[in-house]
Length: 210
Ligand code: AP5
Ligand code: MG
Image 1 (tube, rainbow, N blue to C red):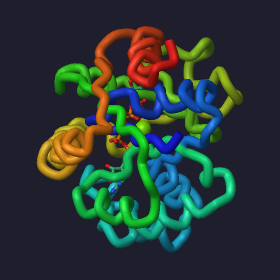
Image 2: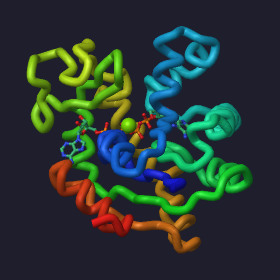
Image 3: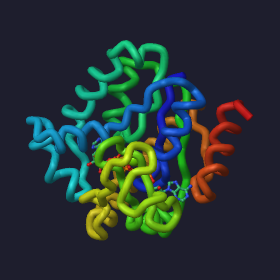
Image 4: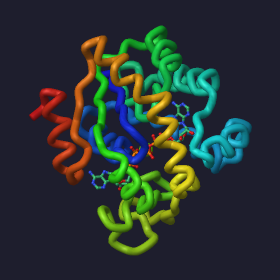
């Protein structure tokens, strides 16, 4: 299954993708996670994108499209994938259509107020990337990842100014993709507001898996 997870920052795309990987058996490909790994490694890509990402703006289309094209050419992604955070602009969606045939787009719907609540309390494992939340998904031991024991940290772009910027960028550049994919008849909406288990149930329902 070739799947896109669409939705505003903090909608829960990464959290749901971790569950969906177990259900569908395809890799989770997050452009944000690839960029953050490059930043942590201080690679040329990481040095190029760090300031852009920290401020909440988008990395340029050319860099991002090339990265995804290379990733989708790897063996594990031939049969299917969950693309989380890509495409994020109409030019990215058009470029993707030229090198891969997306079967379904799941649009995670959530109001801004919940986005701010989720992002301002998010904690991420530095080692394995698992998401936690200071109130909604507390780790068993403060500051420590339940999955691998890694250190939990707050993303640079989860500061208030960057959250506001990311929401503006989402509305201007990414939200138009909802109509773009709806017009192709492959978009399904999922209410991302309830607790994780309920969102998983909503996802399974639109995938015809429940
Ligand atoms: P990216 O990493 O993709 O960030 P994003 O789209 O802003 O989304 P997030 O990762 O912030 O949120 P999420 O929807 O995954 O929510 P999560 O599951 O973590 O991109 C980062 C940056 O990289 C971009 O700003 C841009 O600069 C650059 N970039 C990436 N892709 C790009 C592209 N294609 N083009 C150009 N630039 C690009 O959940 C959030 C929190 O809520 C967590 O704490 C979680 O525990 C909690 N939570 C989740 N679900 C629930 C629930 N149901 N109930 C309660 N709490 C929940
Ligand atoms: Mg994410």
